[in-house]
Length: 220
Image 1 (cartoon, one colour):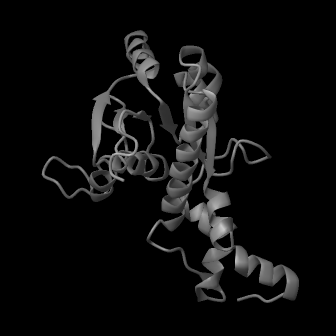
Image 2 (spheres, rainbow, N blue to C red):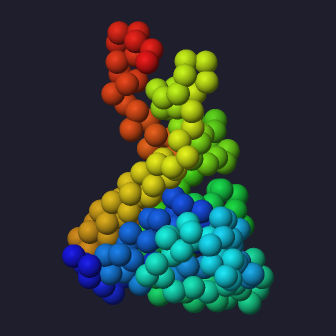
């Protein structure tokens, strides 16, 4: 199983957990993953430092099996480098706000002009539609808005889990979606967007409790 995606190239523009871990899982299955981050290192590189060079535990965990390049994709030279990478890529992973994707030329329309069969995996807090589409958020937003945080702790004080399970669940779902998209492309030659959402993942995990509350009015 470790080499099932051998020959697949993934560009990881992700930050923090949900996007990068999606790419990590694809790398674990044999894909060549190239992390693309800003010059000087991304903001997630130095969270909770454990290495002498300053890298944090989360960065070390989520960047195994990856190559790395630092560029400024909004500069002319950086944009040229990114476009050359996209031509050779099968998958782009980016958990960035929609306006940022457009600014960096990583939205689906821009990508498929360069590589028509590209697969774009995006991760956001609330998905691409609806009144919250352009809002950003982290793991705790999913925990709270799904009601999961109210199932632990005390009635007057919900507790946010320190382990970011919503981020990791979203990454798992996104990696599964990319796997399906790659199989679909093998059959049809077509690329597509795979969309992950923190709130959707959190609602999936809390779904049985939400059904019980809706049907029986039970507040746990």
